[in-house]
Length: 248
Image: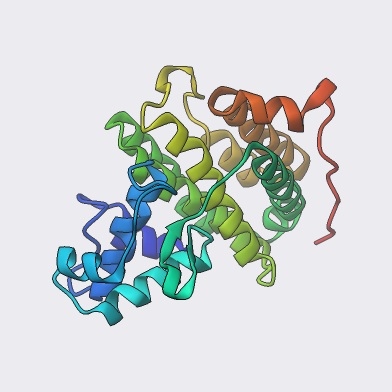
């Protein structure tokens, strides 16, 4: 997901409506993704193409297209004639995903700092500010969309396209794991006041080591507040996941 896509389609005044003229399947996809991330749709919720087509006043083909996009992100499991189900997440899977995220993002940061331009940093600051706006409005879903856009934008600057789909899916699954369990009742006051600003500051100063440290702190602190049981597993005995260095 790029900065442009988020600014134009996902966040805006109504982050759920999408841009004017959006494909109907995109509207269905965003609506279902929101319900899954917020825990409204659960693994116990029945999902049928017929009922969704009636709800959204569209064809089953349109619904099928939206469900396939959700399946690509691992949010649903399509089992042929058995139907479609929201996938389940476990603490064990979340711990593995955190380690994947930690290693991918922190390793990519060195490349991102070396390759970033002033224009890149300015776009990242806009996303950081947009996140704070969404958080002030306590719009949980919009926060997840902007947060993913911020982190994916850094990874895109690092220019590691083969790994981008892995990080994208990892981020959306971790957001779903955390947010769905809180049912949108996030402990906002206990989170970092500006979770992204320091990351951009370090990148703008071209301080790769500092940017990696601030990023890792951001990941760890967010996890500690929102999923303490997983944080304990990943950071047992204060042991940090291994950070492979990737030269620019």
